[in-house]
Image 1 (cartoon, rainbow, N blue to C red):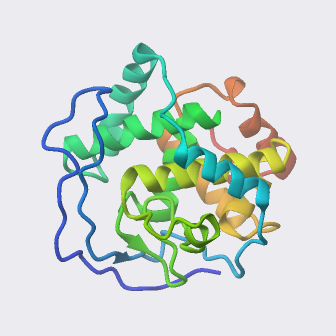
Image 2 (cartoon, rainbow, N blue to C red; image 1 turned 60 degrees about the vertical axis):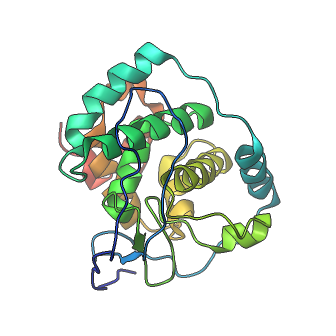
Length: 238
């Protein structure tokens, strides 16, 4: 199901950081603002909320309470610098771009996701607008439904904060990939609430392959399997 909402410019937007230092995370320092309404391309809206999944709730709770995972600094910086120019079409401010990318890399590493896949999900879900909100109330970069906060007993969590949203989104996506036994198309359908339909996986995988992918297909078994098993249109070009 698609939506055709209007886009509202936030009344005020604070910079996440005055300046970005590669891989020196010092906290978000963010100020919440009124959420923008998602554009028609942003989100394939789920018909229903997912059933309560205690295993996923436990993972989210543990992640939100844990210390941040360590990552390889050199590999992270190489990926960050390669991705930063691609992100410029969506985010004008370089400090915002670097802040988002270092968080994506950290959380993708923690959850064993390809960071380029996470960026593809963000592109489809919100066009990298941290204040985006869908007509059903999903919020932020990765369009997280607020009911997750209630399930976790964390009503204070601000889903428009970049770090919080990425932690929720990557944990949820990685869990669904595990539940789906590595079936990326099924996992993306679960994430979006449209399991069994191909439109949302097509959009994400197309963005992943065309815009964000750094690795070769041979290094991405979930992508290869999805292309082979589902015959996706997104897999037809080279």
